Amino acid sequence: MGTRTAIEWTDATWNPVTGCTKVSSGCEHCYAERLARLRLRDAYLRRRPAVDTESNRNDPFAVRLWPERLRQPLRWGEPRMVFVNSMSDLFHRDIPEAFVLEVFEVMMKADWHIYQVLTKRPSRVARFWNRFHGRLATSEVPPHIWIGTSVENWEVSYRVRHLRLIPASVRFLSCEPLLGPIELDLEGIHWVIVGGESGPGHRPMNMLWARRIRDNCRRAGVPFFFKQVGGKTAKAGGRQLDGREWNEMPCMVCRSGGVSAHLVNSYAATGSSI
Image 1 (cartoon, rainbow, N blue to C red):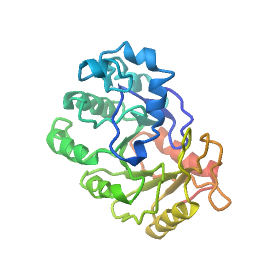
Image 2: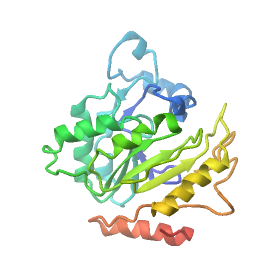
Image 3: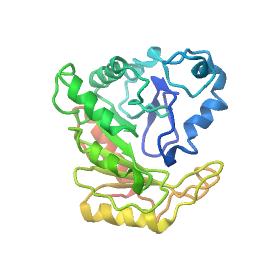
Protein backbone atom coordinates (compact mmCIF):
# COMPACT_ATOMS: atom_id res chain seq x y z
CA MET A 1 0.00 0.00 0.00
CA GLY A 2 1.39 3.38 -0.79
CA THR A 3 2.56 4.03 -4.33
CA ARG A 4 0.55 3.71 -7.53
CA THR A 5 -3.12 2.74 -7.68
CA ALA A 6 -5.80 1.83 -10.19
CA ILE A 7 -8.29 4.28 -8.61
CA GLU A 8 -9.08 6.63 -11.48
CA TRP A 9 -9.37 9.90 -9.52
CA THR A 10 -6.01 9.72 -7.75
CA ASP A 11 -2.38 8.78 -8.35
CA ALA A 12 -1.34 7.01 -5.15
CA THR A 13 -2.65 5.71 -1.85
CA TRP A 14 -1.14 6.34 1.59
CA ASN A 15 -2.28 4.22 4.51
CA PRO A 16 -0.84 5.26 7.89
CA VAL A 17 -4.02 3.67 9.31
CA THR A 18 -5.94 0.55 8.28
CA GLY A 19 -9.28 -0.81 9.45
CA CYS A 20 -12.72 0.63 10.02
CA THR A 21 -16.29 -0.18 11.12
CA LYS A 22 -19.51 0.04 9.14
CA VAL A 23 -21.70 3.10 9.67
CA SER A 24 -24.14 3.12 6.72
CA SER A 25 -25.40 1.07 3.79
CA GLY A 26 -22.52 2.14 1.55
CA CYS A 27 -20.20 0.14 3.80
CA GLU A 28 -22.01 -3.17 3.24
CA HIS A 29 -19.66 -4.51 0.55
CA CYS A 30 -16.53 -2.60 1.55
CA TYR A 31 -13.58 -3.38 -0.75
CA ALA A 32 -11.09 -2.49 2.00
CA GLU A 33 -12.67 -4.97 4.40
CA ARG A 34 -12.60 -7.66 1.73
CA LEU A 35 -8.88 -7.07 1.12
CA ALA A 36 -8.15 -7.04 4.85
CA ARG A 37 -9.95 -10.32 5.47
CA LEU A 38 -8.39 -12.11 2.49
CA ARG A 39 -5.12 -11.01 0.92
CA LEU A 40 -3.86 -8.80 3.79
CA ARG A 41 -5.18 -10.81 6.73
CA ASP A 42 -1.89 -12.26 8.01
CA ALA A 43 0.01 -8.99 7.71
CA TYR A 44 -2.67 -7.06 9.57
CA LEU A 45 -3.10 -9.61 12.35
CA ARG A 46 0.60 -9.31 13.20
CA ARG A 47 -0.03 -5.67 14.21
CA ARG A 48 -1.74 -4.87 17.53
CA PRO A 49 -4.98 -2.93 17.05
CA ALA A 50 -5.37 0.68 18.18
CA VAL A 51 -7.93 -0.47 20.74
CA ASP A 52 -6.30 -3.62 22.08
CA THR A 53 -9.07 -6.09 22.90
CA GLU A 54 -9.23 -9.81 22.18
CA SER A 55 -11.94 -9.36 19.56
CA ASN A 56 -9.92 -6.61 17.80
CA ARG A 57 -6.73 -8.70 17.89
CA ASN A 58 -8.61 -11.41 15.97
CA ASP A 59 -10.16 -8.97 13.50
CA PRO A 60 -7.91 -8.04 10.56
CA PHE A 61 -10.13 -5.04 9.81
CA ALA A 62 -9.93 -3.54 13.30
CA VAL A 63 -8.27 -0.13 13.31
CA ARG A 64 -4.47 -0.37 13.32
CA LEU A 65 -1.86 2.40 13.28
CA TRP A 66 1.24 2.20 11.08
CA PRO A 67 3.50 5.07 12.26
CA GLU A 68 6.38 3.78 10.11
CA ARG A 69 4.34 4.84 7.05
CA LEU A 70 3.85 8.43 8.18
CA ARG A 71 6.85 9.83 6.34
CA GLN A 72 6.16 8.12 3.00
CA PRO A 73 4.94 11.29 1.20
CA LEU A 74 8.15 13.08 2.21
CA ARG A 75 10.09 10.48 0.22
CA TRP A 76 7.98 10.91 -2.91
CA GLY A 77 9.76 13.63 -4.88
CA GLU A 78 7.37 13.67 -7.83
CA PRO A 79 4.15 15.62 -7.11
CA ARG A 80 1.09 13.42 -7.09
CA MET A 81 -2.49 13.24 -5.90
CA VAL A 82 -2.63 11.04 -2.81
CA PHE A 83 -5.73 9.27 -1.50
CA VAL A 84 -5.25 9.28 2.28
CA ASN A 85 -6.29 6.04 4.03
CA SER A 86 -7.86 4.09 1.19
CA MET A 87 -7.98 1.20 3.70
CA SER A 88 -9.54 3.13 6.57
CA ASP A 89 -11.17 6.38 7.63
CA LEU A 90 -8.77 8.91 9.16
CA PHE A 91 -11.55 10.17 11.43
CA HIS A 92 -12.64 6.85 12.91
CA ARG A 93 -13.22 7.14 16.67
CA ASP A 94 -10.46 4.59 17.44
CA ILE A 95 -7.73 6.77 15.89
CA PRO A 96 -6.16 9.06 18.51
CA GLU A 97 -6.35 12.73 17.63
CA ALA A 98 -2.61 12.99 18.30
CA PHE A 99 -2.03 10.52 15.44
CA VAL A 100 -4.42 12.40 13.13
CA LEU A 101 -2.45 15.53 13.94
CA GLU A 102 0.78 13.78 12.90
CA VAL A 103 -0.83 12.88 9.57
CA PHE A 104 -1.79 16.52 9.01
CA GLU A 105 1.69 17.69 9.96
CA VAL A 106 3.17 15.44 7.25
CA MET A 107 0.65 16.72 4.70
CA MET A 108 1.54 20.29 5.62
CA LYS A 109 5.25 19.58 5.26
CA ALA A 110 5.10 17.56 2.03
CA ASP A 111 3.02 20.23 0.35
CA TRP A 112 4.07 19.47 -3.21
CA HIS A 113 1.39 16.75 -3.27
CA ILE A 114 -2.39 17.06 -3.26
CA TYR A 115 -4.05 14.99 -0.53
CA GLN A 116 -7.58 13.64 -0.87
CA VAL A 117 -9.00 12.89 2.59
CA LEU A 118 -12.30 11.03 2.28
CA THR A 119 -14.38 10.29 5.38
CA LYS A 120 -17.85 9.17 6.41
CA ARG A 121 -17.37 11.20 9.60
CA PRO A 122 -17.10 14.85 8.49
CA SER A 123 -18.45 16.17 11.79
CA ARG A 124 -15.33 14.81 13.50
CA VAL A 125 -13.17 16.59 10.90
CA ALA A 126 -14.83 19.88 11.83
CA ARG A 127 -14.27 19.28 15.56
CA PHE A 128 -10.66 18.24 14.96
CA TRP A 129 -9.92 21.34 12.88
CA ASN A 130 -11.50 23.68 15.43
CA ARG A 131 -9.36 22.14 18.13
CA PHE A 132 -6.02 21.84 16.35
CA HIS A 133 -5.79 24.44 13.58
CA GLY A 134 -3.66 26.61 15.87
CA ARG A 135 -1.11 23.81 16.17
CA LEU A 136 -0.97 23.74 12.37
CA ALA A 137 -0.58 27.56 12.21
CA THR A 138 -3.46 28.13 9.81
CA SER A 139 -7.13 28.92 10.24
CA GLU A 140 -8.12 27.21 6.97
CA VAL A 141 -7.26 23.82 5.54
CA PRO A 142 -4.55 24.51 2.92
CA PRO A 143 -5.58 24.21 -0.74
CA HIS A 144 -3.42 21.12 -1.30
CA ILE A 145 -5.46 19.17 1.28
CA TRP A 146 -8.91 18.28 -0.07
CA ILE A 147 -11.59 17.13 2.38
CA GLY A 148 -14.43 14.91 1.16
CA THR A 149 -17.29 12.82 2.45
CA SER A 150 -19.17 9.80 1.14
CA VAL A 151 -22.84 10.23 0.25
CA GLU A 152 -24.29 7.02 -1.14
CA ASN A 153 -27.99 7.82 -0.73
CA TRP A 154 -30.43 10.37 0.65
CA GLU A 155 -30.27 8.92 4.17
CA VAL A 156 -26.71 10.18 4.66
CA SER A 157 -27.05 13.49 2.83
CA TYR A 158 -26.66 15.25 6.21
CA ARG A 159 -22.92 14.63 5.78
CA VAL A 160 -22.87 17.39 3.15
CA ARG A 161 -24.01 19.91 5.79
CA HIS A 162 -21.28 18.70 8.14
CA LEU A 163 -18.68 18.95 5.37
CA ARG A 164 -19.55 22.61 4.79
CA LEU A 165 -18.53 23.35 8.40
CA ILE A 166 -14.89 22.63 7.47
CA PRO A 167 -12.95 25.69 6.22
CA ALA A 168 -11.36 23.92 3.25
CA SER A 169 -10.54 25.28 -0.19
CA VAL A 170 -11.71 22.01 -1.75
CA ARG A 171 -14.64 20.06 -0.33
CA PHE A 172 -15.71 17.06 -2.37
CA LEU A 173 -18.37 14.35 -2.40
CA SER A 174 -17.95 10.70 -3.29
CA CYS A 175 -21.30 9.24 -4.34
CA GLU A 176 -19.91 5.74 -4.63
CA PRO A 177 -21.45 3.29 -4.40
CA LEU A 178 -24.46 5.30 -5.55
CA LEU A 179 -27.40 3.36 -4.08
CA GLY A 180 -30.33 5.66 -4.73
CA PRO A 181 -31.44 9.03 -6.09
CA ILE A 182 -30.01 12.08 -4.31
CA GLU A 183 -30.87 15.75 -4.69
CA LEU A 184 -27.64 17.42 -3.61
CA ASP A 185 -27.23 20.97 -2.38
CA LEU A 186 -23.86 21.80 -3.95
CA GLU A 187 -23.31 25.15 -2.24
CA GLY A 188 -19.73 25.15 -0.96
CA ILE A 189 -18.90 21.90 -2.78
CA HIS A 190 -16.06 21.90 -5.31
CA TRP A 191 -16.03 18.38 -6.80
CA VAL A 192 -18.35 15.38 -7.08
CA ILE A 193 -17.38 11.76 -7.82
CA VAL A 194 -20.05 9.23 -8.84
CA GLY A 195 -19.69 5.49 -9.27
CA GLY A 196 -21.64 2.26 -9.16
CA GLU A 197 -20.83 -0.58 -6.80
CA SER A 198 -18.55 -3.41 -7.92
CA GLY A 199 -17.53 -6.77 -6.52
CA PRO A 200 -19.39 -9.75 -5.03
CA GLY A 201 -23.02 -8.95 -4.25
CA HIS A 202 -22.86 -5.56 -5.97
CA ARG A 203 -26.07 -3.53 -6.01
CA PRO A 204 -26.82 -2.13 -9.50
CA MET A 205 -26.85 1.63 -10.03
CA ASN A 206 -29.67 3.23 -12.00
CA MET A 207 -27.94 5.43 -14.58
CA LEU A 208 -30.68 8.03 -14.14
CA TRP A 209 -29.36 8.67 -10.61
CA ALA A 210 -25.91 9.43 -12.04
CA ARG A 211 -27.35 11.66 -14.79
CA ARG A 212 -29.27 13.74 -12.28
CA ILE A 213 -26.15 14.37 -10.21
CA ARG A 214 -24.15 15.21 -13.35
CA ASP A 215 -26.79 17.65 -14.53
CA ASN A 216 -26.93 19.23 -11.07
CA CYS A 217 -23.14 19.65 -11.15
CA ARG A 218 -23.27 21.28 -14.57
CA ARG A 219 -25.90 23.76 -13.45
CA ALA A 220 -23.88 24.60 -10.34
CA GLY A 221 -20.52 24.76 -12.16
CA VAL A 222 -19.08 21.93 -10.04
CA PRO A 223 -16.57 19.50 -11.65
CA PHE A 224 -18.05 16.01 -12.14
CA PHE A 225 -16.08 12.76 -12.22
CA PHE A 226 -17.79 9.54 -13.28
CA LYS A 227 -15.68 6.69 -11.95
CA GLN A 228 -17.51 3.57 -13.09
CA VAL A 229 -20.84 1.95 -13.90
CA GLY A 230 -19.98 -0.99 -11.63
CA GLY A 231 -20.67 -4.69 -11.86
CA LYS A 232 -19.00 -7.95 -10.93
CA THR A 233 -15.65 -6.15 -11.29
CA ALA A 234 -14.74 -2.46 -11.27
CA LYS A 235 -14.14 -2.55 -15.03
CA ALA A 236 -17.21 -4.64 -15.92
CA GLY A 237 -19.57 -1.80 -16.79
CA GLY A 238 -16.98 0.61 -18.14
CA ARG A 239 -16.63 4.30 -17.32
CA GLN A 240 -18.91 6.00 -19.82
CA LEU A 241 -22.03 7.98 -19.01
CA ASP A 242 -24.11 8.93 -22.05
CA GLY A 243 -21.39 7.95 -24.49
CA ARG A 244 -18.37 9.65 -22.91
CA GLU A 245 -16.07 9.69 -19.91
CA TRP A 246 -16.37 12.45 -17.32
CA ASN A 247 -12.99 13.19 -15.73
CA GLU A 248 -13.41 16.72 -14.39
CA MET A 249 -11.45 17.74 -11.32
CA PRO A 250 -10.98 20.92 -9.26
CA CYS A 251 -8.50 23.26 -10.90
CA MET A 252 -6.64 24.45 -7.81
CA VAL A 253 -3.48 26.52 -8.09
CA CYS A 254 -1.17 25.20 -5.40
CA ARG A 255 2.27 26.40 -4.42
CA SER A 256 3.83 23.51 -6.31
CA GLY A 257 3.92 24.14 -10.05
CA GLY A 258 4.22 20.39 -10.53
CA VAL A 259 0.82 19.67 -9.02
CA SER A 260 -0.89 22.42 -10.99
CA ALA A 261 0.68 21.20 -14.23
CA HIS A 262 -0.47 17.66 -13.44
CA LEU A 263 -4.07 18.78 -13.10
CA VAL A 264 -4.00 20.87 -16.25
CA ASN A 265 -2.52 17.94 -18.17
CA SER A 266 -5.26 15.62 -16.88
CA TYR A 267 -7.89 17.87 -18.49
CA ALA A 268 -5.99 17.90 -21.78
CA ALA A 269 -5.66 14.12 -21.81
CA THR A 270 -9.36 13.43 -21.25
CA GLY A 271 -10.87 16.31 -23.18
CA SER A 272 -12.88 17.35 -20.13
CA SER A 273 -13.48 20.91 -19.14
CA ILE A 274 -15.02 22.84 -16.28
